[in-house]
Length: 422
Ligand code: ADP
Image (cartoon, rainbow, N blue to C red):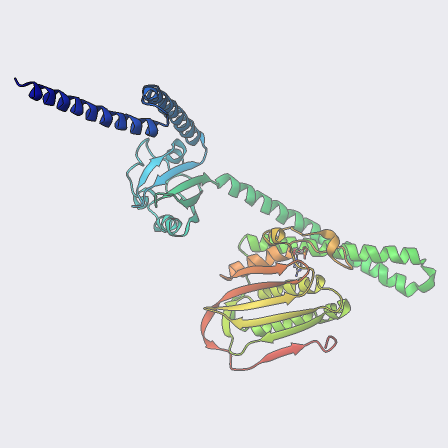
């Protein structure tokens, strides 16, 4: 073979080897960069350490999953995982127990098949759409059992359901209601007698003039005021337990809330004048009628107006407004008094809740039951009650009642002003 041919062959082979080596080096450099190391020599060690890390992660993931499963299994509340198609994909032991089902029989079933209740299915749907929803459910067959079901939307577009047995809670609530009911009924008669005696004593002390020392007269006055508070507290307790046990409403008729607002406010005019607070009622034109118990709704208004006056400063003013809303009649009682902090606003409709006993001027305060009673009465009428308030600015308590339907009150404008305040 010619020498030049041999040389050409050799240099081509060398070139090919050099190119392959260059390509390998570039590949190795890329692998090294991807592995986060400086040179190709460090790659095997880096791969080994990544694999160890992955193994460790897998082990700890398995342990977290085991902990999570053990935790969910140990819960006394039932847990159901529901897919976007409203079928159960997982359930813990408590769920089987609370729903009285054989092991493993829930997975794959639809919500309607499981609960045989369209309301439960609607609750899960509304949790899926709105984020969360709650319902009380009585499983058929499980004697006396009542479940509170809380549903929440899950990240995969399905929902989680938490089931809690509240039969015991309801039983204890029943015992508490009966206890308060019995106690308040027992206390009412002797307390009314003591209150009447205190009143008589105060009158006699007044009539006796200077023969009764001023300190004694003052003490008799205090006894009269405090027994008055006790009598009011006990009668509100009797009221609350009667309303809570569902027996609160008297005759239900078509009502003009504007007229009830006006008469209820009038009942408090003297009290407001004594406190130096102006009262005003504004009733919009053509307010539709509502259906309800006039005495009970009057009680709600008296309570709201009484509070508004009580928590207003001397020279303050309280306005009661009645207007038609969408499918409901809205009544507002607005004051420019001390207001209520946001944290307390969430609790004032609870029984016995009082923001701060030291804030009320002139008297030792109420019972903390008035708003609880008002809420029960409004809810018994199918309505809702709420408060908007800012500390130091004032509060507006509102309640809305469903419209009874046509006919409406004839056109008119009712406004009553407090002459003393204007
Ligand atoms: P009470 O008999 O104490 O007035 P309520 O249930 O009527 O009981 O009210 C509960 C608490 O809510 C009151 O003690 C008071 O702290 C607060 N509250 C109610 N109405 C008003 C208001 N208009 N302005 C400020 N605080 C109020």
